[in-house]
Amino acid sequence: QEPKEREAELHSPTQTSIGQNLSFLAKFMELQWKILTLKNEEAEHKYSSSPLDWVTMETNIAYWFQASSGAQIHLLGNVAIWTSANVAAASYVALFLWYLLRRRRGIRDIPDEAWGQWVLSGGLFLGGWALNYLPFFLMEKTLFLYHYLPALTFQILLVPVILQHLSDHLCRSGLSQSMLRALGAAWLSSVCLTHHSFWPLTYGEPPLSPAGLRSLRWKDSWDLLIRRQRQP
Image 1: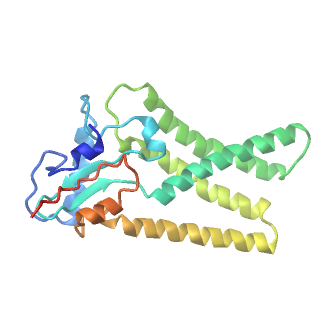
Image 2: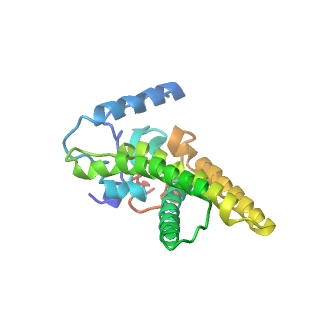
Image 3: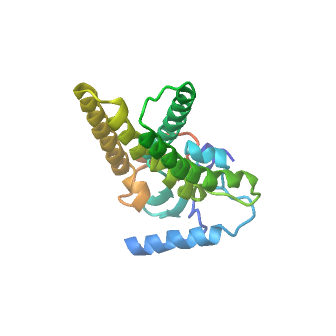
């Protein structure tokens, strides 16, 4: 089914009617329980996805929906962090290949100690990402976005590695250091702003209007539960 065909008067995505208001702890326990139970389902699910969808966050998971108010909880990553992790991984690979080719020609752009730390960081974090991500391509079970979270954690850890490397070895002038600090501040601001924008979909409050939900549907592939407006 296409996402637009499912934007109707939807019931709970877990097929459970929840009439009462839930506390934060109750919502958290409900989310964890659904993760534990959904992982055992082998049949195709509306919110299942392929590993290729995870890297660019083309999918989401709806965990809870309150029909009376339209409040809902989704698993949706922070777009700023998700994108930064991908950029950090690509930057690491590009810099690693650049350094490696130049070192084979006898050119040492960074000291041997820094090179050893650079290789170790990549082996740990990029390798951890690969070990936690690539095996899913061999699995035939039903997969969901949350399966990617362990791999994503390793990928996110590459962000400070890249920033520290830029600060120590590539941005040595006062101007470049100032620009790097400004870039870091802008990145942190975008992370906080994105988190604040998606707060209603992360914690289920406050409820959003259909227009508010559409404004948070940054990708057409995200399946938010938007109720149909009734004609007067």
